[in-house]
Length: 284
Image (cartoon, rainbow, N blue to C red):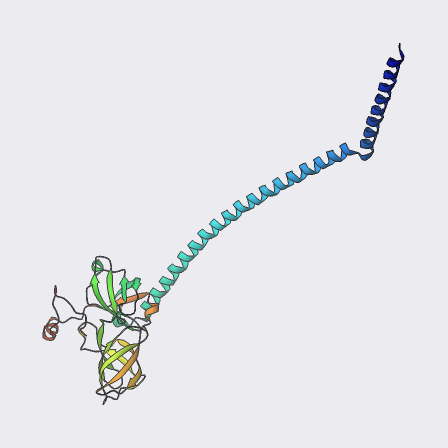
């Protein structure tokens, strides 16, 4: 073996020894730092965290489904409660109107207000009784509190009512105290105020007097409360008189419909349009 080859072997042996020493040191360092164990522990922790999050997410999804179920159940219960309360309120209102109806009015038709159209000048009501229930045009509509209006059109199952708070509605009235007569009209605006026309300045009509329907009316039965005088201001020839209607139109639920008060001979003498002719709706 020549010298060069011996040198080569010694050199490679030295490199191999260095490499083995380095590997030994690395293994020793790994063992001392316990990296595999730490990696394993970290893996276990990560796996546990993920499992916990997945479980939490599943719990949240379950809670959301349960909340949705409870909300749907509460909605159904609320709907039933509202229906029951509405039925009780209607029954209570019906019993109230029957209890407050004088014996002379017990034969009147009872109807429920199912729709209303309110505006500044043309308010209308719709009730759930019609021709098949014996309702006819020009019937007087009232409550135990007083006059509501008149029936203006009828179908088989419904009737349309023009209330006192309509610009075309007029009714003859008389004071219960002084017997002063006038004509109630409504010129729009507030539903709790109407005008009383044709009151001479010589009249003794005063604030607070009750106004009733008269025999002059072509549709209303006599003696129904219409309202109370709220102000009297003397004018040039007639006083400007306002009144508060006896009926609160914002709270109407059930109404009474009185039999027709039309007397053919009286209507002919007053020139009221007959059947099939145009009714201007400005008659008393």
